[in-house]
Structure formats: C-alpha cells, structure tokens
Length: 358
Ligand code: SF4
Image 1 (tube, protein in one colour):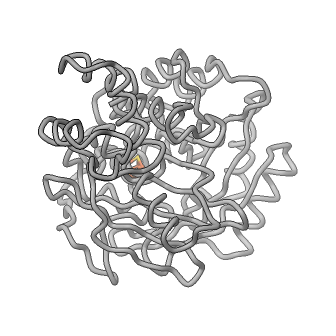
Image 2 (cartoon, rainbow, N blue to C red; image 1 turned 30 degrees about the horizontal axis):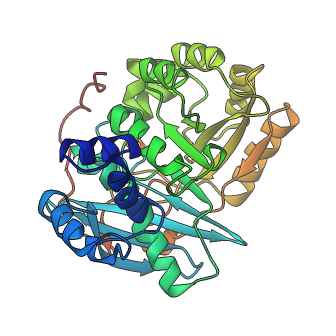
C-alpha cells in the first residue's frame, strides 16, 4: 500500500484516517514486521489490523557473503518463489540491487536470470520488502551502515512490471516512509521504448540506466532479442526525447563479451551512437556463468575499449565485478547457492524465442 492506500483502507474499515497512516509509518519508516511492534497503537486496534491485513511479502531464506563484502540474499515470497537481492558496500555507501520479477522474459543471451524464464511479476510489496529486510539485516549486523542507494538491476526487467515499479518508487521515496532520494535510485532497462516514454511523464523520477551492450543492431539483435522489436535507433530516439532533469545523465551499461562487442571499432561506433546524449558509459567485463558460452575479455582488452571510448569523448567507467565468487555479480543472478541452482534453469533447444511483446 502507498500511504494514501493505507489511509483509504482505514476509512473503509470505519476507522479514523490517521490510524492507517500510523500503521503505514510503522512499516515503512520504522520497519515493523508485525502489528504487535506498533506500541503506540492500542491493543484492540492492533488485533483489528492483524485480522484484516498482513505485513511483508518476502522472507530471507539464505545470505551468502562474498570475500569482497558483498552479500547476496535469497528471498522467498509467500507463494514459494525464489528471488535474489544483493547488498554492495562501497566505502560509506551501501547499494542494494533489487529484483522486480521472478525470472525474466527478455532473454539477454549473456544473463543467467534469462535462463529461468519469466515466472511472474513481483508486486510492489515484494519489491519494497527486499529493501526493508536488508535494512533490518544491516541494523542487526552493522548498525553504522545504512542503505544509501537502490538499483533496480536484479532479476527481471522493471519496465515489464511497470505499475508495480512505479508504485514501489512512490513508496520508497515517500517522505513519511523510508524517504529515499529519487537521485539515489536507478532503474535499469533493456529498452522497452513505450514504457520509457511513460516513465518520463511520471511524478517520480529515478535515474535511468539502459543496457546497450552492442555498437550496432546486428550484434544487439544477436545478444538482446528485444532489439528486434525496438532497435537501437528507436531506443535512442526515445532517450533523446526523455525529459531528463538538470544535471542528470543516462547511464549506458555495456557488458563486454570477448570477441563479440569489444573491438576498438565497436567503441568508435558506440561513441557515434551516443554523441549528444547526456550520458556516461559503464563498461562491465562479462561475469561468467555456466549457462552462457561467452568469455570475459582480457584486462588489456577491457582497458583498451574503455580508453578508446574516453578518447572519443564518452565519459566511461569500469564497473569492478562485485560478489562474483557467490554468483552475485551483474548478469549472474539465478538463485544459485554454492554454485547449484535451487530452482531449475530453463534449457533452451532450437532457435531463440521471439522478442517479448509489450
Ligand atoms: S539482463 Fe536484465 S533484462 Fe536482460 S534477461 Fe537479464 S534480467 Fe532480464
């Protein structure tokens, strides 16, 4: 529920509006996970809430800890679906990478989540609850650390689950709740053009990251089937029209796959494509996993690609792999514990499926 939903819920029960807000604040601001924790709500009212409502959409099933401090949480929903979320400490900052779907339909060829297929969308409660569980975990284990940034880069394509994405953004940024700054939230998309256009008109304005990963349509068609529906030209036209707020830039993610998209000529094509777009490029050396037959380029090839982008005027940064020893790095999320999947991965036979419909 958003705050307005909670107030309306209270009124619908014949209660004063403020009682809905009181309970909502306990959940979203103070992190309560049961009505019994709401000490300033009368006992009878707590019982009345408990008869009519529930708190929390997911539970932590496992926490895996990387040697670099990254933690991967495997979370289980009420219907037994498994999703993952990753906590990445970086100095004083802690970024949480959250999931928006159980699996994913987009089928990027280098991504382990794609091999799960799409099981279902997460509802807004299941999306925000990933953050609240991590907030509680940090409060218990590292009281000096708090979540400073959220990235929608876990399992799923957030714009495929548009309404729940926007609802979750409204909840997380509500000043009476967790009050995260919109500037500290990034939504990453593979490029669902119609939904990008819609997002630009919302009252919540997260940062935008776009998985580009290819310098031209031929390569992008191959590694990201969504490109066959919305190609690079359509994607960039939508991004050029996107109403970016002042001093904000679009982040383009570029997973470097050895021998596929990592040539210096590809860097030049990328620089041509992005000329005039306020942006930066995050180069991500491919994180290997058993389901995809790609390889990470050598360190020299990665540096050469990055330097060429920079030389051509593109602000380009190298994303250091985090948590790759626990399958928590970019592109590796597939509900694996100690290297083995806890839910079966889809094994594809025959040609790739058609690109997803909007
Ligand atoms: S990279 Fe993202 S959009 Fe592509 S298949 Fe993986 S989870 Fe889905």
